[in-house]
Length: 494
Image 1 (spheres, rainbow, N blue to C red):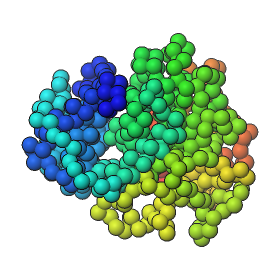
Image 2: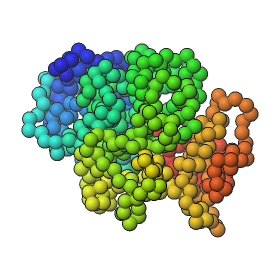
Image 3: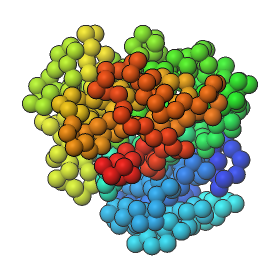
Image 4: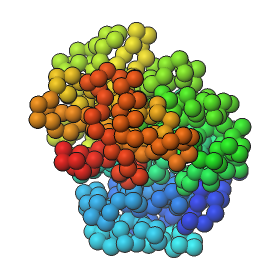
């Protein structure tokens, strides 16, 4: 900030207004004023401060984030798409002293077990402009900084506690992976309440002196914004790129400023990678892999391998001190061609699950964080995501990776999205069940269920092919945008 006070730090929306820019000097001054107001309200070092904001309040969220850290307090970001009972649970579990909420989220904090501050819709931070507070002294890298609640795909979300050190380590690792400089502009629709939005995106840009653009996502508007802000790096989940490729707005979009299109948060189907390369040939394609418990830290596949190592999640770690292992069920390292669970270790890994010693103990093996992801290692050390451990389908004694079947379905030109689950079978134990969303822009006749199954038979072994396919308008997702496979299982009585 001292080197380039007038440089762009954040581009985003405030109170759902138009996009505007905060310089590094603006961000520092605004955070100081909000910190002063929070201190006047009684917030002290170590207190937990909740905030329920979405990307429509992107700049406000980042100001609040830095204000809380300035006081030595702990951020508790809460996804604004959560239901009121979920919000109440997080605030109660975290022991939040107070919670800030956007005007649009008033109903979500109605039952909050702490003091509530509702931000003004027209000028959200107007009630939080206190006498500027200087950064608190004596903070250590082991002090708590952020309490990030997992998306809760299988149950109640758990509080992932990150320190100042682990948060910054994650940011430095991804800043290095993206080769960010002060000339870069990173645009992303990742929720600003997530580790991806805060550490992977915003904090990595802050470390490099770059600019982060908090994208309040809409396909056509986001594509236009890339040209407006001259974005050099775009970061999103695979489904976002699927919607790009299905949108007529992509044809006229000016994307020449982009040097990297990054995809993470889920497996990127090989067919989608190839289509994206054709549609945006000037940008390098990068796969990244990480999880909230790791910072998010993890590994990545550099652009030069995007097409030659289709489906790989990478061969390089984010940051010089991050390490990965792949182990079998006995905890032994697997060799080339082996398959096992991915473990991670490094300075970006969480301190633990907040107020849950049992879950914390279960998450680690001899100091290594268990990812819960099954991966394959090839002969040159590249990693390939096979599936989540809980999403492996055992059909008649054969292991079927749902991600592999999803990749086959994605290879059909009429399939926009696909999710595959295992459902009970009286003789086989489990059977393969697919749920797909069809593209609105596909050329040719709409495929039938039989057509989709026949397509899979051309790409997969017979035992891997879905026996049942359901076509839906949209896949159910949680507040973080991840597909809720448990809800799909419940829908078919699994």
